[in-house]
Amino acid sequence: MLIRAPEVERPSASAVDAALADLERALGSSKVDTSEAARTTCARDESEAFGVTPDVVVHAVDASDVARVLAIASERGVPVTPRAGGTGRSGGAVPAAGGIVLDTSTMGRIKEIDRAELVCVVEPGVVTGALHAACEAEGLFYPPDPNSWKTCMIGGNVAENAGGPRAFKYGSTQRWVLGTEACLMGGRVVRTGRRTVKGVSGYDVTSLLVGSEGTLAVLSEVTLRLVRKPEAVATLLGLCASARDAAAAVTALVTSGLVPRCVELMDAWTLEAVRRQGAAVDPRAGALLLVELDGETREVEAALERAGGILAAAPGSIEVQVAQDAAQRDRLWEARRSLSPATKKLAKYKLSEDVVVPRTRIADLLDETARSAEALGVRHLTYGHAGDGNLHVNFLWDDDGERSRVDAAIASLMKTTVALGGTLTGEHGIGITKIEYLPLEQSADLIALQEDVKRAFDPQGLLNPGKIFAPRRGHGAC
Ligand SMILES: Cc1cc2nc3c(=O)[nH]c(=O)nc-3n(C[C@H](O)[C@H](O)[C@H](O)COP(=O)(O)OP(=O)(O)OC[C@H]3O[C@@H](n4cnc5c(N)ncnc54)[C@H](O)[C@@H]3O)c2cc1C
Image 1 (cartoon, rainbow, N blue to C red):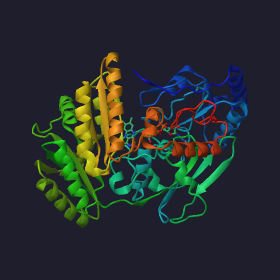
Image 2: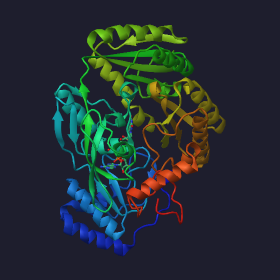
Image 3: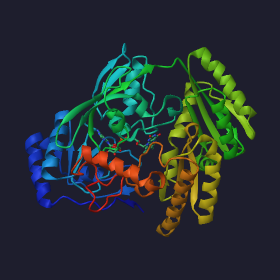
Image 4: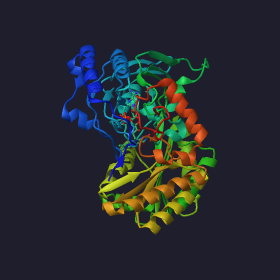
């Protein structure tokens, strides 16, 4: 059971044919791919969203390819959906109206790593994990680490303002983007931002583009800030009696003044799922915290001792374990990073949300989610970036007949999140899957203001239509 993209006007067959002929003339047939395999692959991402299979996939290799595609799309009135790694969780790269998928995964160059200025310049198709490795080889560090880092790409990370476990200390992608090269509908190319540490000229268009989900511009280059690679890293595992105890321990850690780089939580149902996959998790644990610290060796040693003490002293603490070496740490993280695919195997269908609440309300969110899901008879499990209050609440089901109850559980989660002072999405974006809930969080005036911004960038409404905002008849093309 999938989530259908909103109805968006599709291009006419003659417009598509004319665009195809223009694209082949401008880019050459090797980059213009109408194969069934490419079109089918680019019809979906890693969410439950589906839309309309694209008519063509264009594999861009540089900014001039991107600009030419956007010029042709504007001229012929054909929608364009930008795409990078295709790992999105909200349907951002899923075409709602067919047309052109603009594949930027084929723009994968790391153009520069500047050790003196602590910046790098990369194309959107650079795999995030490859950027980590390239920076670390130079003694540098690019902190954003979405758990999909092996396959997601910088273009998608910037467009979604991706987070990840290390966001607790280092922030989401937003904090690391200094500037972009952005291609606009119609074919103009602008440079936004800077490569200096400071800079406040004009509006902060770079920040507007970060998290715009491919609806305002197509990124052809990104300038990112780097830091020196931390000298030492240490990882702690805290076994707790319940998720409420784990949430209280998170508050104790956060208010202690310590700044771990990651504070991850897994609830009882997640641990049960992990055990069923064969992992040896202590049967006494009703929740688990994974805490990671980094910095200078002596600082990390002192912080490790303090963090261990805080976890051990927290009510409901069962045991605190320290990863003894890098191999043990890697094993712990492998278990955390494989949670998403592992839990997907538990049922035929899984919907994964990424709500955020104030950290002191995590326990309330977990309690209310359990109450509502159990009243509806829906299976659920929660894990995520508790240090940021950002939790992946997952709903599981096997039978199509259960879907209406799952929808009710999701609606209840969204309402509870907003009532607790939270936000619908911490890192996956609104895309297709959360469109109907945006008005719960944002006023009609704020949504209308954003639609005006969208029209300034994309007056014809052809760039990634059907995303973030519900299409309104007779109200422009947003
Ligand atoms: C197992 C798993 C774990 C995950 N863990 C995390 C996590 O910890 N944190 C997190 O934040 N996310 C996570 N995600 C979600 C996903 O990986 C991120 O949203 C990621 O940033 C998407 O990158 P991508 O390259 O795959 O983008 P895509 O899916 O290709 O596209 C995502 C969005 O970016 C737009 N886009 C793509 N390229 C461009 C471009 N060049 N210019 C403009 N717009 C563009 C698309 O139109 C779309 O709206 C996870 C996903 C999976 C499957």
